[in-house]
Amino acid sequence: MTSLQKDMLIYQEQLQQGAVQRAYKGLLEYLLSLRTHFQKNYPDYSVPGSLYTGYMDMSYFSIVPADLKQRGLKIALVFLHKEMRFEVWLSAYNKQMQLEYWQRIRQSGWEKYRLVPELAGADSILEYVLIEHPDFSDLETLTSTIEQGTVAFIKDIQKLLEII
Figure 1 (spheres, rainbow, N blue to C red):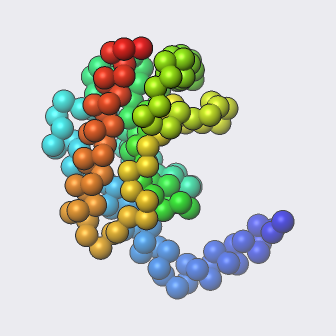
Figure 2: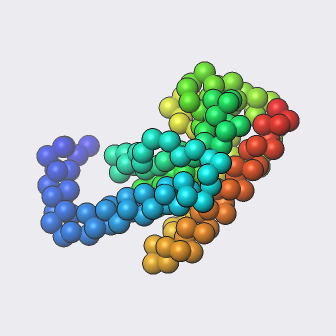
Figure 3: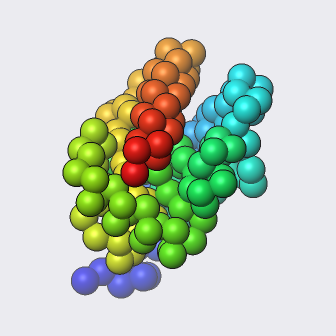
């Protein structure tokens, strides 16, 4: 096991090169612009709160269609740092709602998206990989791909909730 001191020395070396700061700042600026994109283009969806920047593990923001909010559910648009990918998740406002919908979806046998195998330590109910290894050199195309996948996911979830 490495010590905190060793990790801090490696961290300092990486920071002195400057790429980590530039990449992280660029990523957060992109996520904020993506959040604004959803706010402007989808007025029927609430985009509450702010961007959760995380501990360089994940960064995300929520998108909440009114019908999901009534059920205590929300959508999370997530960037996983280590995996370097964008995902969209069905999440709940609290653990009780998370358990209720996790059980209902599991019992329904619906398998279009990945149901988390167990809830202990999970922040989601369903997960879908939008983009594996995104290309940040073309942000317009990246935004379009994320938007299309997220909107399709939301519509699928809305249809699912009508039947369970």
